[in-house]
Amino acid sequence: MIRVGVFGAQGRMGAEVVRAVQGAADMELVAGVDAADDREQVSGADVVVDFTTPDVVLDNVRWLVERGIHAVVGTSGFDEAKLTEVRAALTGHPGARVLIAPNFGIAAVLMMHFAAKAAPYFESVEIVETHHPNKVDAPSGTASRTAQVVAQARANAMAEPMPDATTSELPGARGAEVDGVRVHALRMAGHIAHQEVVFGTHGEILTVRHDSMNRESFMPGVLLGVREVAGLPEQLTVGLEPLLGLPPTGE
Ligand code: NAD
Image (cartoon, rainbow, N blue to C red; front, side, top):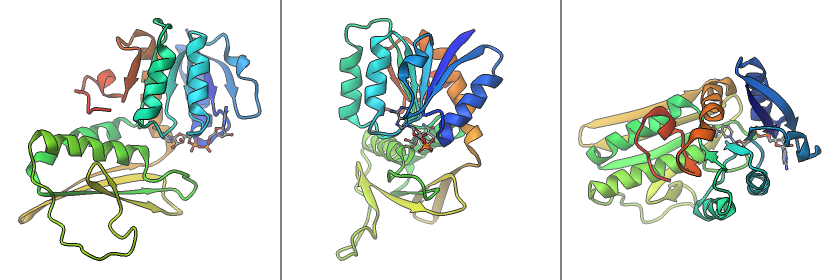
């Protein structure tokens, strides 16, 4: 039995993780902890899943690493500076493992893989992501990561700069730029988590689309992470790809 704790247990994702862990035959829920609770409740856990907020997650990861508890992290907002801090926290704790996945949806990970494959063959690519209106960060971690992956694939193929004649614009009209790839974020009632990677070249358009219908869709990926995290070769793993036998799409 894998003993599992959950940080952010009363949140939308955390509550789903609590249910998934309770429903997994090989897992035992040690405790679900939210902002008002004492983290010590998870001290007997092998693995803690964190779906909290970008401002507290780093402190949670440090706390877990210091106690030798493996961390499976879904909270968004991990840029290079934060990853460097996680690596620093892991120094001196060789047995500790941290898995940070911007997206635990297996179809979402495949979407990024397919987008990277397509990237060298198209002149233009832009990303449109749509999320529920309660999401506090934009663009989504998945959209940012997809943009980085696509930009890297274009750079590897020595692609020409994308054509764009815009010389005047209202601020934001062309979206945010992530590694040179435009990302447009919609926040809309009635939606959960959706993304289109739109590729264009002469006479042909390819759209790689992913829709997450409910938060349960992330759970097979989260449970895979919980099962595999202790055996991961690297102290810090970013992305679900190595666990799915896919090549890394880069941090
Ligand atoms: P949410 O606001 O519903 O839940 C966050 C919960 O964390 C809240 O209950 C809050 O009280 C709690 N919390 C805050 N500080 C805490 C602390 N110090 N200790 C314990 N709990 C604390 O948010 P959500 O929709 O569940 O999303 C959580 C995070 O997961 C966000 O960053 C979101 O972007 C990300 N996310 C990631 C994936 C993925 O696949 N990686 C999927 C969906 C959402």
